[in-house]
Every structure is written in structure tokens, then in C-alpha cells.
Length: 171
Image 1 (cartoon, helix red, strand yellow):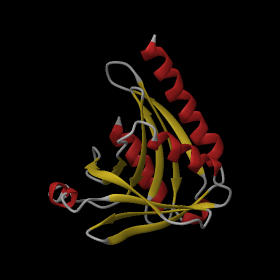
Image 2 (cartoon, rainbow, N blue to C red):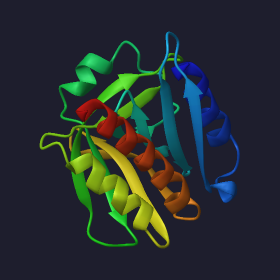
Image 3 (tube, helix red, strand yellow):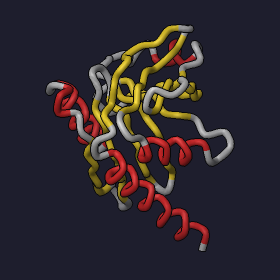
Image 4 (tube, rainbow, N blue to C red):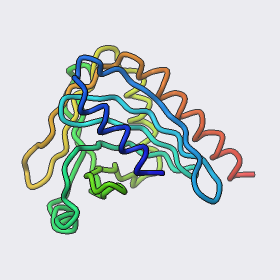
């Protein structure tokens, strides 16, 4: 299932970034449950907001194949770097992982339980674009401009799906 979602990401990345509007998808998980995800595509990476089993994530997906180097790369303190509508750059700690098709995905860490939701809401509120990159070892990689066109609708859909799951878990 994750392979299908990530496969869709990279099919879109292979297309020109001129069609870089946001899209969202929902998929059934094996053995029950659903995954909802919104994706915005840039030149070298895709910015994602994802809800799976009530857990909200902000991710950056790339087309790299680092299956054997991920453990080492995570020692370099990876981070997701964002700038909303040209504002100051903000860096968030992340963990690099691989998808089912061995592509690198940076997943934002959420130490206080609310940072990821705030960032997702900021993505939805962006007017023009989000600049995004993955940083590790003091250098930025996969710098991309992700348009805001469609972000509000698609990201809010994921946020609402995660709110429903949060409410159901708290009952």
C-alpha cells in the first residue's frame, strides 16, 4: 500500500513541475484502516501531509535510493527545511526512512505533540508557495518550490480525517 502511494509520488515527480498542484488520496490498509495523504510536487521532492492510524505526519519524499545508507544518514541529524511564502526559513528535526520501493522519505519529528499539526496548518494557509529541502550534515538537498495551488483543500481534508480519528480514539 505504501509502495502504491510512493509510486504515485514518483510518477508525478517524473512529470514536469509545471503541473505541480496538490493532490490527495485515500487508500485502504491491509487488515483494516485507511491512510489519507496530500501531496504537493516540487522540482526535486514532494511535500506531504499524511494521516495513518490517527498519526499526522509532514513528509518530504525524494526519488533517491539509499536503502543501505539510511542508518548512517540518520546519524547526520536530518531535518526538513521549510519557508512559507518567502518568510524566514524554519528547520524541523526529521527521520529518514524508506518506502516499500526504497525511496527516501524524511518524516518530521513531533516532540511536543502539536508541531506537526501547526506545520500542516501553515502549509494549508500558504498563499503562493512552500520552499522545501532536506538537510543533513549541514547541507541542504532536494531544494524544491511547491506551489500553494490546491494545498488548502487537500491538506485540510487530511487534517479533518486525522481529527476524526483523534476524537474516536479519545472516546
